[in-house]
Length: 277
Image 1 (tube, rainbow, N blue to C red):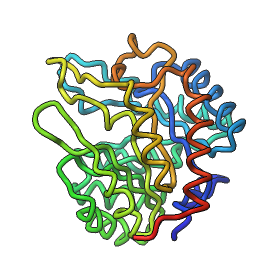
Image 2: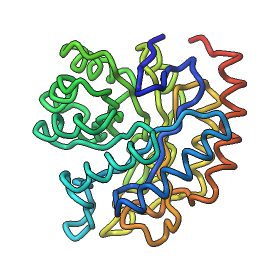
Image 3: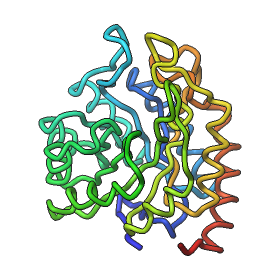
């Protein structure tokens, strides 16, 4: 079982649960620090490890008119501010090889979006950055196909890798999650993360934007954590219905403390009684 060091956190499938949470995209420094502060407080109270996440650019919006975010320069300044003010590791997406090195100067974790998880040059650039690399499993991949993704990042000498499940395409505008994929990806030894909010997304389901079923996001989180995994990825916002992106599948910020308490109870049970495949 591999333990990935992220700041002062040790993330692994046999370690206490890590919560990776924040808004879909960065909106402002004050907004990011408000969410990070409340999430850190909730995770500390529940005994969970916490990483703040947010994107400086949503490059895969459904429509060309979709709001994409602050951009890399301003976005990295905001993320640096969260690290300094709240004292937590930060994660953001990268979309091109050129973004990896500058993003790694600020961010503890570079995330490879699901649509880009087979892009060899991007994986190599992320690995060479020295940051932790979190790869979201493509909606079109089987869990065992992630073995090849792992090998690409490992070829750079970087073994700080995490693998995230975010659902599999199932017909039009629909995703389904096969929970067997979580222990299968854990056979790589690397930490496995469940993306509870994007797994209930309805890609392109509203025509010019994606829909979602946020009421099922806690269900996905509970089911996944009960298997004994390293972490859960959750997008959250104080006003999801008016968030600039992914609002339909984000969990309301004021619901997060109770959810984290529940997830930690499942986590303790799962880690005390591990599954062996």
